[in-house]
Structure formats: structure tokens, C-alpha cells
Length: 277
Ligand SMILES: C[S@@+](CC[C@H](N)C(=O)[O-])C[C@H]1O[C@@H](n2cnc3c(N)ncnc32)[C@H](O)[C@@H]1O
Image 1 (tube, rainbow, N blue to C red):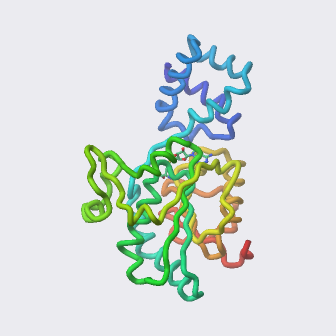
Image 2 (cartoon, rainbow, N blue to C red):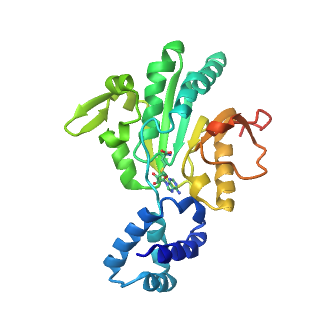
């Protein structure tokens, strides 16, 4: 499809999906390709006919919603964030857990894609943090609305492009080469569980000490949906717990329940004053 047609279509349909056009500007061509494939499946000749098809078929909207799911991720993506988590955030959370006599730190990765983010955390914890806190363990839940991403996450084997940012020593210790892939060793996989879940609809029942919601809600969702997502996150985070958003993202204006922990990296702390949910 031509760029002008694509922009027009996205600017028309994204608000109806409670998403925002600026988030899609850079990745729009990825969405065009998927929509082009969908036009072929439906035997439609152009973008205008897809738009009228959407107007006549309510059941096409969830299909379009799935086509707008951006799946880019990598292990150790934004290394400064992971270094900070390893150096500051995880030790503080572990220290607090140990001081309270608790035996685990619980983490939720929202929009975990194929598991790159949760496994990175598991590796950094095991190799960098756990030796200082032998009585505390890390449990990580990864959720994503894309069932195929969850299947890949459970397989835990990645092409070279997904692990290219990882320091060589971490790669050597935590991955087993297997034909053209690199598979996460069982020791790290044991810390992580995955669940297919749409953050707009449902959330885990547990409470967490660390929640990552990077390159999803605060890029693609519209303002109202961002606020709803943030409410969900707040309700699932212990007071003093950490929230990590993408380093190029920001929280909606006027949010008072979170204090900057290291704002330039997108790291926030849920206010201590918030009551325990
Ligand atoms: C751009 S990736 C970000 C992955 C990872 N958080 C990162 O920063 O590298 C966004 C992920 O969010 C997932 N996603 C999109 N909409 C979602 C929703 N409503 N609920 C849960 N996950 C969603 C996509 O399937 C995709 O895997």
C-alpha cells in the first residue's frame, strides 16, 4: 500500500482501537505489510475497500487489533536499564525482602514478547544479584496477548539477532547453542513462567515488587487506555515497588502515584504512601 493511504487508514482506525498514531509512525510499514496480506486473504483490492469492510464487519476489528501488535524485542534491550536493574533496583528489592523475612522478589513483565526481557532478568539475577542474597529467590511472570509469542517464549530458543546485545560472558554462561539458535539454559528458565494475557482485559491475581511495561502501553495505547493500564499496574505493585517503562516513553501527565527512581531510564517507584493494595 502507498504510504499516504496507510497513514490515512491508521489515523482513522487506531483511535477506534484505543491506540495512538504517533506510536506507530516509525513501525507503520510493519503494519502495512500485515494489512496487505490481510487484503489478499479477503480478496480486497485496496485500502478503501478494507475500510468499508471494517465498517460492515464488526468481527474484523479484533483481527486488525492483532495486526497492530508490534513484536520487536531483544535480550538486554536498552542495556543501561538492565545494568541499573542489576546494580540498584534488584539488590534493593532483595534487601527489603530479606529484611522482612520474605523469601522471594516477584516480577511481572507485561508484553513480554518471546521472553527476551524476562530471561534477561533471570540471567542478571542469577549471575549478578542472587549470590549476595542466598535466601531470596526471583520469580518472574511474563504475559503477552500474542499466543505465538508465548509459545516462542516457552521454547526459549533465539536467533542471533535476538541475543546480539548480550555481553559475551552472559551469552556463554546462560545459553546453549543449538543449530542456528541459542537456547536459554534450564537454570534460568526455571525462574520464569508465561501466560497469554491481554493487559487491557485482565491481570494476574498476585502482587509484585517489580513490573516492567516497556514499549507497549506508553507507546501504542491512547491516553485513556494508558491511564487505565497504569491503574492496573498500581494495583498490582507493592508500595515502594519498581515500575520500568521504555526509556523513550513517559507516564501520562499528572500521575502522582509514582515517584521517579531514575526517570531518564524510565524507572519509577510506587509511592510509599500508597496503601498496600
Ligand atoms: C514492542 S514489544 C515489546 C517487548 C518488550 N517489552 C520489550 O520492550 O522489548 C510489545 C509486546 O506487547 C505485546 N502486546 C501488544 N498488545 C498487548 C496487550 N494488549 N496485552 C499484552 N501484551 C500486548 C505484543 O504482542 C508484543 O509482544
